[in-house]
Length: 251
Length: 132
Image (cartoon, rainbow over all chains, first blue to last red; front, side):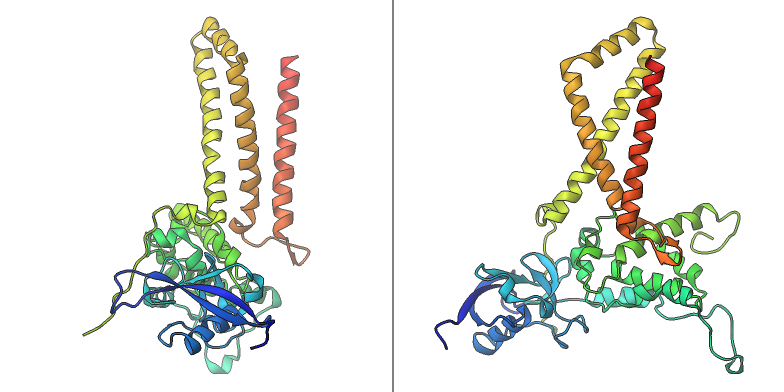
């Protein structure tokens, strides 16, 4: 190890469901180079200090959305956050906020997966169409209406940023509503009225109090807060205009 | 048997844990000052309905040093509330397309603030003329 080797202290929130009553912090002194991400710091700890340290990761390039964690209290992808930006201070990493901790930095995402399923995240065709009628034609304007909301990588940093989700885990939440909005905005889709039942439900958009932190932490600039808030307006319109044009959740 | 025992962290004091949340709580609570000022004006209206003496009493009360201090506090809080109101406006609106391009969040916030300034100046001018 060269003399110039820099060492950063990484404080990790550890939790072993088999032996710990509650999570506790442990500090590791990790040698690092300027090109090392926080994820690589965690990998160093696992390889050299404690093989039982548990965390999710895969692509290392902000595509897969697996490695989200709280880094000094802020939800971030650990693969695109660099140790050099925190040195010489100590860095603290914890499991994503607002989710139950399964073990160490791994959270229980089963609730989120159920929500993703519940919004029917697929195109439900506006009208039946046979193969010989050819492909669906979409104009650039129609494409632009939803493309931003397709960028979500399901990293759930927005849930870790949303205090309303922390207070009410039933809230469908930013990413699932952004995906719901993506399908509603697709010119080929005709199921907005079906999805409205969920938008306007107790676990729907009105849990949001426009904190806006979800959009702030989103690594893909999906702006889920925008999707949620547009759907507040949509739900209100659906409710108040139901006598003129009965459809959707409030029928 | 499952060894799973997911640990749920407490939400106590959540808003103190991040500067973003602290600012959120501050800008949301400035709404109370808007309500307080509306209430002040409402009291004025009620006093007006009670006759000339009551109305003049309310006017006198408005001129007291304490009232002036409150008005300065109200003004500052309402100005901050206005600023944050328009700052979050871009996330609440559907995309606005002008000339084939999406209007930027900055432009939306800017136009909102401009509208607030124009409306305030207009009201000030109107009241000024009436007072002459």
